[in-house]
Image (tube, rainbow, N blue to C red; front, side, top):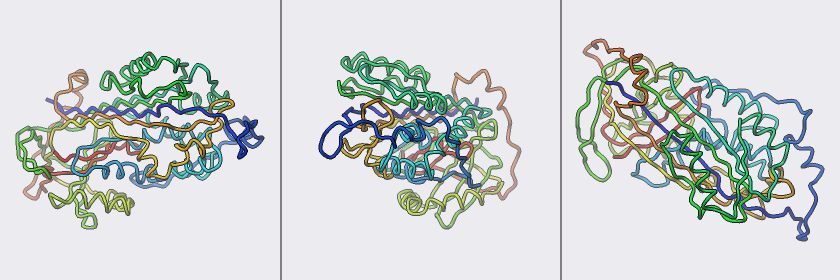
Length: 421
């Protein structure tokens, strides 16, 4: 049998309520010359390329540094899954149509110094995701526009060009039909893993814009786990019997005394994506680890770069996690505040003659780690590598208590989670 890993993420920014762009006296104003000459409405401006730092994980911007850790710390002692990379994608689109304080907040979150870098940064990111060998990674995005609103022509052009977004009109006066339309698209793009995300109550007549981003990931371990068994898992709520799987083999590994944790990398087929498990030394050490990483996320990169090939006896649980979180609250925690304020939002270059703000943001994810996965049965024969006998000095990594994990590819945190029980 094989071990398969299936993960689905979908982030949606729902119900950007419209209001006319007004000056301090309350009168409707015309678009300023400055707005018209912005990057998104300029055909002549050169693209400015981003310089990438050669580290294990890309930690540019507050989103990559803080998002996953903030999500993990929302509620201690609970299983959680999120996608920093996917939550990043809608922000890139919004930055194309932002100015003033909103633009500054977005660029800081994205780790960019100016709006000219948006195109090269996201084009590089999306291209890398499209050609990820050995795994299935589907990325799709769509912009839904209210029937009474008109998407800015330049904004539409650039989102299609950079993010490959499709656009579709919706009738916000019929919330039930609109929610059904969006959920059908979500189900299609996530291969049925997420069937219902949007509720009709999320949509009102004032809705002028909905941004949807869906990602589906499917990967097989480069080497299968050889045995399954049942063992005690020590969680904050007590000891529980859980299904575990084990394998003896050689993995990238590091014992990090700075973080008081063992770190092991489990590669997927193709060699460019992997799961990293960060297992605290102590059974009750995950909360302390998360707070330490929040204060100094670079400590994780320093530890990951010190990993070396090591003989291990690796034991991890089989698990499934489903999470729905308030994405808006997490955006605010990483410094995105003006976008949610009807008076302060400066998203003026997205919908013609309107300034929009974000009224609600939702993130929903499902992750499953097991050894069955009939969907990939046709390619399971590719991953039948057995493990060779190890020497007597093999290190035991037994994840039978809470740990932090990251699914990464090309220096990006595709998905991040915590497993407590």
